[in-house]
Image (cartoon, rainbow, N blue to C red):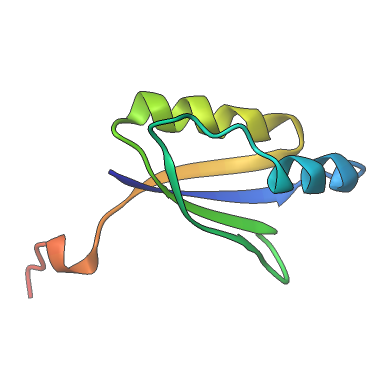
Length: 84
């Protein structure tokens, strides 16, 4: 399963957030596809693959101390069933 995390860094947490983003704890069965810093908000975008939502949550939770985070399941556009 693909997942996307967006991070909006908290004021005063930039140094810790940068350190965490450079050296996150990555579970063995999770693969980072892209880890991007952005100009503007959100500040960080992480695209990763995990076997299930539980593993994704275990990875995502570490960013909560330095950022407002949002995690979503990502699907290739070809898998969407459009009605039009």
